[in-house]
Structures are given as C-alpha cells and as structure tokens.
Image (cartoon, one colour):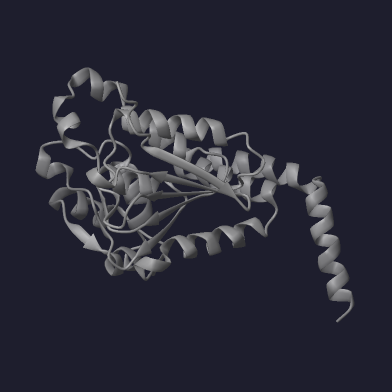
Amino acid sequence: MAQEKPRVRVEVADRIAIVTIDRPEARNAIDKQTTRELRAALDDLIDRDDALVLILTGGGDKAFVSGADIAELKARKREDALRGINAALFRQLEDFPRPTIAAIRGFALGGGCEIAMACDLRVCGESAKLGQPEAGLGILAAAGGTYRLPRLVGIARAKELLFTGAVIDAKEALAIGLVNRVVPDANVLAEAKVLAAKILEQSPLAVRLAKLAVNAWAKGGMDAWRTVEDLSQAVLFEDAEKERRMTAFLERKGTK
C-alpha cells in the first residue's frame, strides 16, 4: 500500500519555522491525520533553539485552512466532542512558548479561523475570508472560537459573527481587530517573515515571558497575570541579555 502523503511540512531557516498545512486539494481542511501531524510538529519544534518564531500557513493559494474536514466531522459522536480533538491541538498552539504568526491567504473558516486565532499574530492577504459558520452546520465553534473571538473583537461583535455565521473579508477583519495587518496576497508570507524578523531582534527570553504573561491574563484574569508578570520580570532583571541590551542603550545615549 502506498504511503499517504504527509499533510504537514516543516521548514526551518534563519531561526524561523514555517509550518505548512499541505492539503490544497482539500483546501487544507483539518482531519485527524493533519491534527496528529501538527501536534507532532509542535512537539518537535518546542525544544529547537534554531526555531524562535513559528509561522503557520496553508499550501496553495485558495485557502489558509478552510475548516475541519466536514465528512469526518459529520461522523463524529458525543465521545469525540468530549475528547476535544481540535481544541486540544489549538491549545497546544496557543501555549507554544515561541511567538506564532498565522500567514493567511484565501479561506480561514470554522476551524481555520480558530487555528488562526490560536496564533499570537495574524498577517492576512487581501483575498482572505474569515468566519465561524458552525451554527449553520448545527454545531458550535467549540475549538476556541467562543472565547478567543470575544477576546480579539469584543463580545458583541463576536456574538454577531457566531450567531449569524457571517464570513467577512480582510478589510473588515482588520477593522475589528481580528487580524494584525493586511497585505497583497503575494506578500503574505514575506510580510510574516518581516514581522518575525522584528521579533527576533528582541530578547528571546523577554518575548517568551511576555507571551506567557499575556496568556496568563487572557486565561486566568488579573491575579494569575500579575503573578506571572512579576515572576517574569524578576527573571529578566538578572538575565545577561538584559544587562547587555541596557548597557548598549546607555552607551549609545552617552555618545549623543
């Protein structure tokens, strides 16, 4: 029996990992195999010192991720929902210790929008279409859509999108804060790399702890955030990178 083509590709260069969901014939829909391969890719990358920023994108030019595989989703039962197959993957992505950027071209619907929201930042092509159409299929945006979407766009707008299943374009997604920036489709990956390069100019530990602190606030409220922020700052105050960067700043200031 011929071996099935891998659904996920990983390339690492210049301290950036590009993870591509590569099912263009299915508009990069997420099925169980894709989920398994993505989880394995994240597990592999988590300890790699040569991958300090992760860019997630889709193969081909028609879709970032069109959503979950509907044929497979239709067959899932109560036990599958309780296992939280996609939700667990998206939490793993959200908790990935390095910054993550979704490079979006074409459709990012349902699970595709949810996995984009699980990333820290989103760079969007002008052709992109985003939305949570699950209610029209008789289900819920249960892989993070009901809490990540309100965090990004506010409760009222999130409810409108979830209740109506509306699909919005890139311009509207930018206006409501769902994505960070919009560029021509051909420039999406390049723009994501530019953003990654700016992140790489900063202290890796400071960025990592900033992500931890923001995620703690988003998930646990002010008390959890304050604890993590204080601990993170305590670590950074005695970090050699902090000493080097502040010394350089003061030396530059002294020459002016």
